[in-house]
Amino acid sequence: MPPPDLMVVTDLDGTLLDHHDYSFDAALPLLDRLRADGVPVVFCSSKTTSEITALQERTGLLGEAFVAENGAVVVAPGGRVLVGPADDGLAHVLDVLGDLRDALDLHFGTFSGVSDEVVATWTGLDVGAASAARRRAASEVLLWHAEDDDRADDFRTGLAAAGLDLVRGGRFWHVLPTGRDKGAAVGMLVADHERRTGRTPRTIGLGDGPNDTALLDAVDLAVVVRGLGPTPGPLADDRPERVYRTTSPGPQGWTEGITHFLRSDR
Image (cartoon, rainbow, N blue to C red; front, side):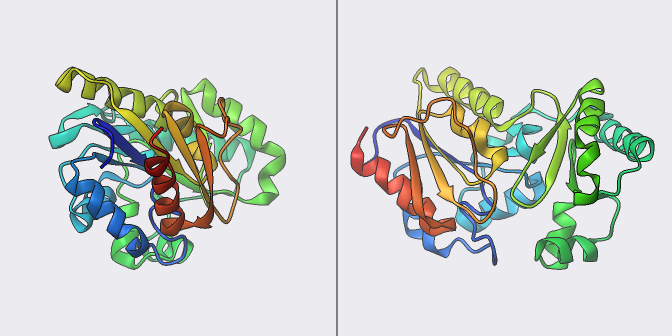
């Protein structure tokens, strides 16, 4: 049995979901066990609200808290929105990106600037899932071109001046409002849990990419799932008793990491 008030906060692509085919079959037995034991499993992803709620339904977790768009949207249990987009949030992001692309002569592609079919090609999703991935409320996804690397610092500076951050994911870059990262979202959900229950949950966080660094820094116990690309870090507290690095990737590594900490009973 897990300890009382355990909370699992997990990235999706490359972590709970297989990097290639987006399956989670290898994690399903442990996911079912956590659900049966009443442990909240919080999806914390760059994915959209539409994508996350569809996955919650498939995994039996509909109604749980979740974090969408890398922290730009935070929803508590039962659908209570803790952080949502401002009325002009996405329009502001797109306006700034357009201005900087012209001013710096950049060549990046964006999810909003191409069709569902193109995003399907970029991601390996089917066209319907690609449409859901484009349904963003407060952030944008970039396909960066290496030819523009010499202007990346100027691009970041321009974004920061407009109140925006650039965050690297596994395959894409994400632009979202400053201060809305996965770590801040974890803090909001822990505080919400404390208000509702009077108890502080012990958190296990899992991720595989650079945009998961803030998430892994914000939890009590961190699982770095073996990935195919850039890894999270450097972590603020990288002690081996707090951080476990898996030998398996994707959902196999997800199961390996949580099992390690449940078995250790730390």
